[in-house]
Image (tube, rainbow, N blue to C red; front, side, top):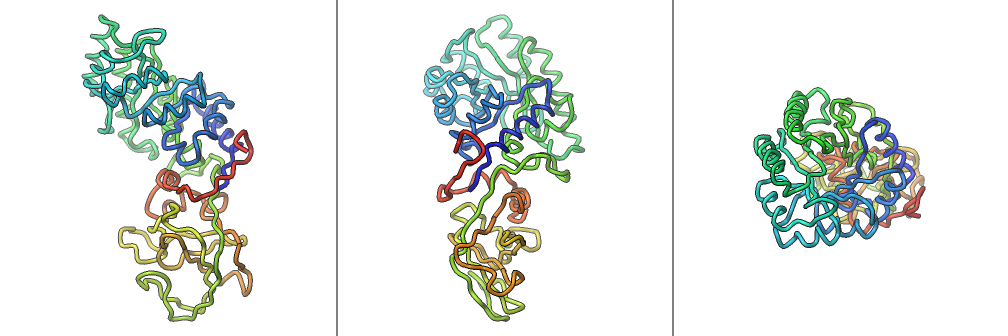
Length: 370
């Protein structure tokens, strides 16, 4: 894997221009979507990012060691009273999304400049995490009297922002605006990567991009404005010549229609190159064909099933003796977009990036991660 930190910083700056005057946070959960938070977070900080989101307190603890001055929010909330001391020790800000979270934080939370700082998550239509709008308003009214908790941020999460015409986004916006009236004096955040491109109404004070930072396409059906950050490549370990009528890989699901040059590449589903990218024999994927690699300036299709450690590509059209052991095949990157590679596997770029295995050697270019 080659990870272009200059492209990462450029993506942050593009999002900052898009969201202005709102601030832009960095979502670095799941080890910065598999890219390595220890390399990614300092680059975002140098680009101007001061607010970060993780999913788990353990991720926040690791990030605190890297960025001692950052605001770090933990999206998945408060993991019970036994977890509260770690939030205080490492100055982590829980995103509270249930009455139980609120009660626990009131009893066990830490004090910063004001009592028990946190974010409040309201569910406006996702039905995943968050207080109902009624619960959120009731809390705001009670907390205005008691001052037991100090919300730093009110947030919700868009369910369909990658489809700019979906009516749910507008309904969520209206619901969030109504709740926001009860939380005067604190910042608000609704937009994720896709929401950042829905217009100024959705930006509020802070946007929270994730996949767009890492080069993923934020809006379905539109040209991707983000720079490529991740290139995944694997070596050819054997070149085979097979005859028409022979089959390739497990299950004999692909029968060769011609004499074929097969490039056997040292990457498979144990490396995060999904079995569902197989050229055939994947009943769960409801699309024709499969994935492609990029070899010697040309796309080459996957042949048969992807296996645990190896994938076969059809290199016939490159010409005789064009492929050698040791050649590099791009699995995704500047020539095979990460979103296209994911779509060929019946999934999304988020899953593809976060499932990349530790067997990849990660080479950082263009920034402090060198």
